[in-house]
Length: 472
Image 1 (cartoon, helix red, strand yellow):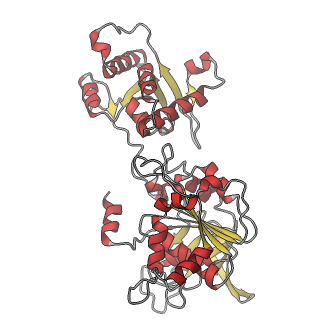
Image 2 (tube, helix red, strand yellow; image 1 turned 180 degrees about the vertical axis):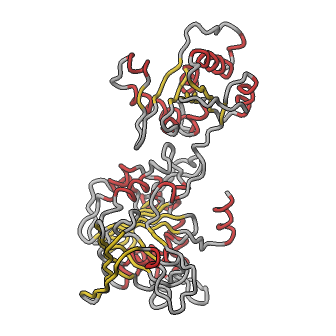
Image 3 (cartoon, helix red, strand yellow; image 1 turned 120 degrees about the vertical axis):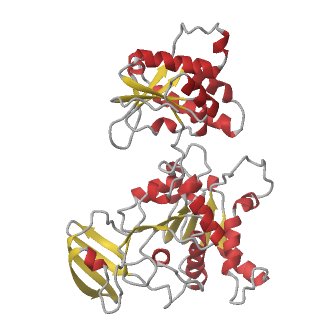
């Protein structure tokens, strides 16, 4: 395919299929201008009716364009409408319309041919800029190449990792030498003075010196991923000083409902879940890293054994991975049942004994668990105040920031909220790894001392699940 000229400015012309594929594509071209031809607007108008995903995407694009053009004058549209951007120079949105295009010519009966004609004319009018067509249509890319029009595939939908969209919540300093007789390698990486203090039965490390800029309150600091070395949480942070508190060891010394941590990130996760000073926990990670499994174990420990909470509430966005299967009969809990497969699978695994047999069928166990666990739809949480509750929000990446705000603000006295998710598995149309609610919550609460976040990395499910995450 033809490559664009290396000119100072670029004009990216978006095809209809790009906007249908990703309604937020307008915002993914950094400081460059985005052009939408009238042919594309007409195609979007044809697709906007119906309940299929393509119709929802077309309507979302129309709403986005309506918001951008609201309260703008013609002269502003002619100059280009600034596209909001978090940082750096903003690009502009431009519309392309030629009323004297030879539409009577049979050649232009095809929307693809009209689009190519519009791009060719724009390129002639703007010799100072590189005009580039962006489309996911292979045939259109071939046509564009034949007419010497620079063309690119849309790559804004590449697979995102949780670390691309949010902080990992951990600073791990690898050990490059045998640990025998040596201090924790963490101190070799830092230019700080360290003093140890004890207060109220707890140990604290006071650090003074060059504190890394990437550190923040509530993050994990460890000297190895897999071996039980020095592991601590940042309790306080200020310019030139930090306070670390060592973590409890859930690898060998103790367990949570019979489960142990396998690495430093899992150990940190269990510490966050069991810490009474942490009110909000966010856990990200690929499928099979143990997010729901560890959260349920900690929830049962604190509710059934320690009696710290009176109930466990479990909710998630009822968003299908593919086409909606339609109406679900029954009560609210019965309607939510198809979405709760992860909850029941992990429940079954937690109730297995050492021989592998499950006590899930035991009536007494069912009654005990059922009395403490509530499964609710997020749609009916508005206006509620949750006291003495551990609220688990699963698949949090499928919520918008506004929806997660509505759920988190339900917290009352003695309530802890745990958000679980993976930005690589977003099923909600119009949300991306950087705009979903999970990423927003992680970044907004990063420096709040009563919140903690960790991104899990080791897949515990199976070698096939590990291969799928790596290869797909």
